Length: 396
Image (cartoon, rainbow, N blue to C red; front, top):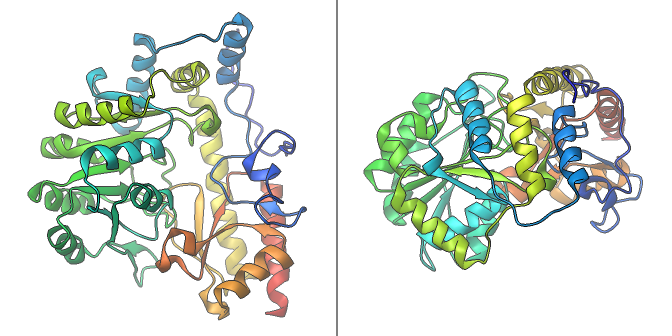
């Protein structure tokens, strides 16, 4: 219908209230003051690509929402995006479609580990990693990341291998780019992890949902590094972060090893899940096929928001340190210099500042004293949030 992208205005504030938005409409239910400014959950305050909206509108006008499945064109769109952006050649036989990556993680835990087994994570990390492990009767084993003098997080590789051996680890959840600490793991770092996992027959579940948000370095698909890694990798991708489609619930999981894929598919079947939401399928294909212009505009806007935040903190709130940021649109802020307890910091931010961020403890005990802030929003909202933060600390 249209030949040009129409949704390239990222400055205009779109009122998301009364749209069933978890981010905006559930403040009171989640125990927050009514007039709280939310910069927490990882969705964007931007309209998605106009090409995606056109495709969805076309589907809606058809008026029938029966059982649906993706056709060859869907896979070609996904395959083309992976090839262009990561130089990664995926095969259709590897693909398992799920209603989200967290669902896939839970199914992996059930399919590839037994009750009481340990599953390895690297905290502070996306909190559903821990939840799907514990909720399914498995044990969290933590190879805690450490903050180096270069203001970046690093992996303790000796501890990583030691815990794999000691806890007889079968499955490792890798987060790359890492949420919330913003690391984009280098190829060298991934090779160290991969060699250890291959040596000890550990399956690597690589959550790469933020792969399209790399601002320093380059995103390296773990499975693409070596043929050996391809055989032990479950690569989790989705257009949901990149194109702001989380509510449409669709993820593309790639598994080259047919034995691992069969085990996961069997578990998904046992859960009673089959066809995906038709709107998710339509949106994904349109996004990957026609959304490049929108993606580039959004990416550059967020890149400038990250720069703005860093400069604002340095000039106005030097006691809050932004951890060196390489990937994702979620910044990791260090509040420890304020000397406040967990409860004092929460009271300051929520009740006095009327800001809704994600406190660091939800990502693991190593996250205490930190806050995660989502900068995928119009600049005016970000400015307002940072000014609230700045005025708060005048009395601290």
